[in-house]
Length: 494
Ligand code: BGC
Image 1 (tube, rainbow, N blue to C red):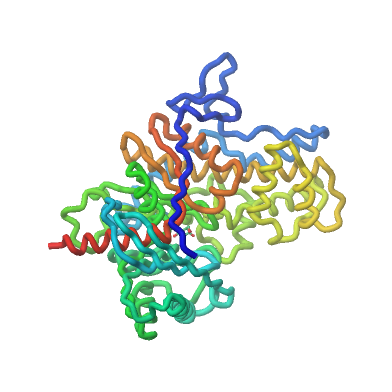
Image 2 (cartoon, rainbow, N blue to C red):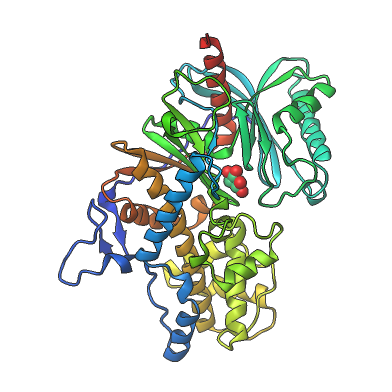
């Protein structure tokens, strides 16, 4: 497959923001028009409307801790800021704040052919990318499924598999003897030693391979490639958020933040070099550097206990990597379906919902579907999904409305929490305007996510102009652009 498609969505300015039907001005405060709502309440989802008012009230009461108001979000923002500062200073913190060693964005001179690898989900992608004057002129992609046995096996087996895939790919292009520079997008927390080396800190999402924590994953990949006689050099090791930031900045130089909101979630932003303490290479000429926040782990040290609910405890207990990546389990696509399942099961236990959904049946795509129907005032597909999840239990329209309400409360909380992180970064960046490049299935496919995020970010970062931009293929094009930036830096090095 060849493609040279750049996609980005129209910018949406603050002036277009509405919250629960209320216009919000450029300062993020509600317009006062007689029935001015309190700023606080602009964050709350609308009430559940059922004919049975007592049932609706009981359900709302059960879900009250999942509905975060403005004051709670401000507190989350304050804790996030403190953790962020501590992480940058290398003090104890749940935020890694990793120096990526990417000190500049594309300038349009990026040239050459590159291989790019994307490891982060259940599919591993291998790409051939050609850049001319910073533009992508050719992209060939092959996708390889990574079976569970490999995702949960040994690190050595996983990396041998990755190298086999690369070999298969270059053979399929007839380029097995060519020399390549390679960008490796490894979307897990790392301790980076340079732009091309870094150790895995911990696995997340659906990976848990043994023997890799503390291992330099770029060096391991390099060894496996050499063992296959391939003339491929790993030039860049990066996170998918860094790739998204770089790919976004290539489209619009105002982009200063890269975000992934998909199976996992994380953000990366340009930080002033004077605020970053972890350096293992010379950096006298560097002014700003991309920092990978790793916000999925926010709260792993208990600092977010004030928003944790029994529902979150149960989702955590059912997860592959318990007591780890606390925040990711509130916001990312891997967990929203599970959160809805657990809430409905709790309601069923209390006699407020007719059946307990089968564990693992409801996916985040179902949550999106319920939200889409809720926007349209329909229930047909929601009922179908619930029948799949709950078997033969009798389900009626009011049950579909309850499930849609739960899907809405869970989605709203996710949007609020990811917005807290982005708003905090915007406030500290002190730029006249910042573009936020975002990728990930939840951001792309959830019918309300983008609108909620625009709204909540402007409420939480008043007077900080920003725009959200869909930026695809950070791990392909972003990775190749970063490899080209690394080559440019290497040439200019004294
Ligand atoms: C990983 C991050 C990654 C994010 C999005 C998280 O689980 O820790 O490194 O950026 O997922 O893929």
